[in-house]
Amino acid sequence: MKLPSSIPGVTKPAGQEAPHTGTTIVACSYPGGVVLGADGRVSVGSYISNRASNKLAPLADHVYLLRSGSAPDAQIVSDYVRHYVHMLEAEMQESASVEAVANLVMQMNYANKDVLVGALIIGGYDAQGGGQVYGCPIGGTLAREKWAIDGSGSTYIWGYCDAAYRDNFTRQEAEAFVKEAVALAMASDASSGGCMRFVTIDAEGAHHSYVRGDQVPYKDMPQPISSAAAAGMIIG
Image (cartoon, rainbow, N blue to C red; front, side, top):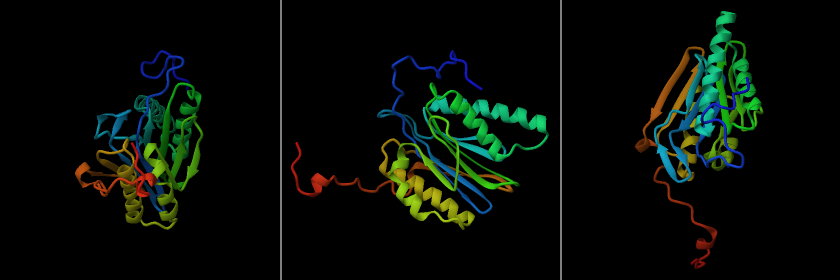
């Protein structure tokens, strides 16, 4: 599943660095399902090109992909994998497992690791494995996790997620955990912002929710004070 080198938006001239992009994506599993969430900001450096982007891409009825990194790279992976999943399910005459879909994402990302800049999270539910979360960072590694975060905003919330996550979350607690994590990252990361989108996937299907930008918690949180300023040092 190696992409042709002539696809627009995928190949990059030799020596050209990938654009600086920003995002916050969060996923966690709980007994009975998974919750995925993301901010809505798409940026290139200091320029915000979209404040209401949907970074939740359906790969199957019961599996979704969270996209971060280069937007066109992540989108082309989700488009190709969705196509392969549809063919697989048509051949098998049954729904593909979450693990099988996650491995398709991994193979696409790994086979094209020299040209793709996509940090991805796969989350879904099936009868065999229940709720499952897989991380697929830049380079194509695949690892199943209880919770996963990525994007520029993830650096601000590792401590929160590690301390707050519990194995015995209820659905409501898992949804609150993901919402809190995304909101905290958006409050600290200048490259994350806009609205918030969430999807909860369980045995009954996918359930979507949306939080407008003016309803995001912590949007008015004060900026941190530098250590130099706190010590009374004059900088200039």
